[in-house]
Length: 367
Ligand SMILES: *[C@@H]1O[C@H](CO)[C@@H](O)[C@H](O)[C@H]1NC(C)=O
Ligand SMILES: *[C@@H]1O[C@H](CO)[C@@H](O)[C@H](O)[C@H]1NC(C)=O
Image 1: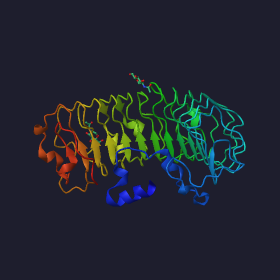
Image 2 (image 1 turned 90 degrees about the vertical axis):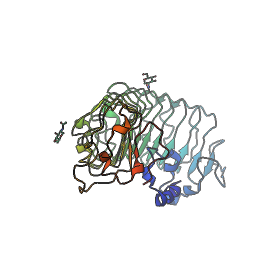
Image 3 (image 1 turned 60 degrees about the vertical axis):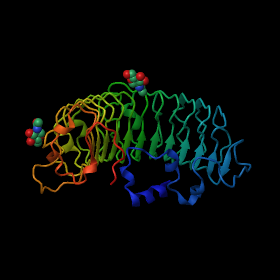
Image 4 (image 1 turned 180 degrees about the vertical axis):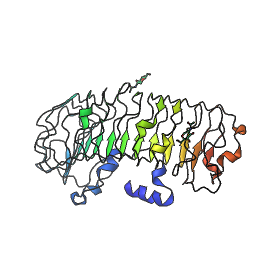
């Protein structure tokens, strides 16, 4: 998968695909070459399965990878080998994580608990997992983010649970987290306490989609390069919420209720390349695009934009240095597209990058 992506990178730009995060199984195998897990084919059966005495009943064990998925397990199996680096318990019926379930697994790097029925996790359940990098808890019944997660954690996936609030204390000291997936939880209104993410000094990807939060969270870390907040109930973009996000390259705000983008918002994210604001309630093109150096993709389709001005996208001078737009969508807006003057897009060199009329776009951006 990774190499497929690298290969694609040569042909087209892999990063440019719409906000699709690779599956967690792609992430799993990317480091730790010594473990030999790279030979494991995606998700399915393992080659040369060793059902040795150290392998829990019914599980499949290969080197330090323990596969116990899809077994109808109601609890975490006993006698998991101490040197396990990856433990896959997805698609079972585990309801609870007890204090000692992972007690001896000091070398565990990846723990997959996706799609169980977990409602409670003992506060000390993760306390011996000093090397844990990836914790996948999606599709469970958790009402809170677990406490005392290992500080070594780089990736937390906990979407599709029952979490109603992200508390400030939830991620305290978690300075190694890079990827955070919190989508499809019943977070309401503010949903995320101010500065809840403040300690995530290395975080690069945060996704809080389909949760019904009404605001962009306060105090996001400056390391952030992708922020996906699609499918919520956010009503406006204010510049203070984007302040200091100097590394932000992708901002996803599709399918919200945004009616305004405050002047200065885009100036606060000087390295933004992709802005998705489609399916909102905007009545005009967001301000600041002509001055923006790196913006390439701006989705504005399915809004309430009734007029597009000649200065909305491009700088006044033709010779101003400006990164090329590779995708602008404006279809499904009340503006009659024949009224948009061609000069509006004078800085767009690839005309196929512009989706104006009320037709569906045929292909994604191509560069
Ligand atoms: C968001 O709100 C809608 C109703 O407005 C509701 O149907 C949906 O379940 C909510 N989503 C979540 C994740 O709570
Ligand atoms: C937006 O801000 C810029 C620079 O701060 C300023 O020149 C411009 O007049 C402002 N526009 C509006 C509509 O307030």
